[in-house]
Length: 211
Length: 125
Image 1 (cartoon, chains in turn yellow, blue):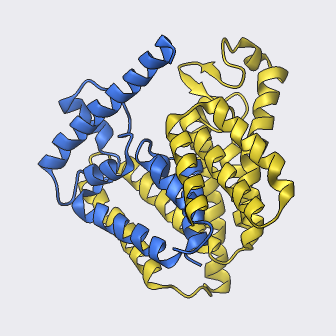
Image 2 (cartoon, each protein chain N blue to C red):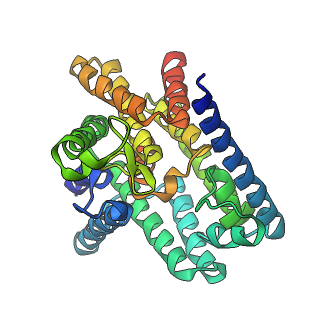
């Protein structure tokens, strides 16, 4: 089952259907649901062997409360979608407690780099990229500022921020091969130019320094 | 700073302030249980002309949609994770995500939400 989580980390952030760039979030969401459902079916079939802590119960209460809130939500269909998404996230959370930590950190540090490579391909290897008017890495794609295939610059910067901090964690553990990953993630952050991600990275680095 | 950058920055701040004003007006109407998931995008139309789908601040959006009860649950979960993984070297990742949550809505998107919940899971080990 750990394999499902590794696939999710590597695929969900960069998943998109070619020529349907504006539906990228929907595609990512569908992929996340498929992976979470697979895990749930596995748990039903083979039994759920993870011991739930008090914190897990609290998270399940949040899921239950969110589900109840559908009754007073204005748009019930979208509210149901949000509850299903929260359920999928909780499956991911439960899986993340049992997986190989170093592998997960390495994947978190690598996914942004993979996204950057695909962005370079779309920018310089496709017709769509050549139509892009400005910005070396991101530019106006219809109405939104998009860093293919990681969604808008705010979402993509979040992935690079986590990647940069994961790379620092690897360096902190003595794995110096993570230096190129750190450089790529910092470059991705620069390409996105999101003030919130800069602040987040700064806060994370500060926490590393003072911890 | 370049004039263009100043303009972009100011418009970004202006949008956020406007969203917070709208959110506050909605919170005052239903403080305890909120308006239900994803209701901000519909209810804001009654109050403001601003076009954002989500409030660019997660705690405020949670307060609008799930009320004080929902926000309290979220804060309890975060506090529990922080206390559990206080000396964990992965804590800076959670801190960074929490900072982002103040300016964006990462928990609503599948790719950024996935990152957040993986970090929570790794810290809860």
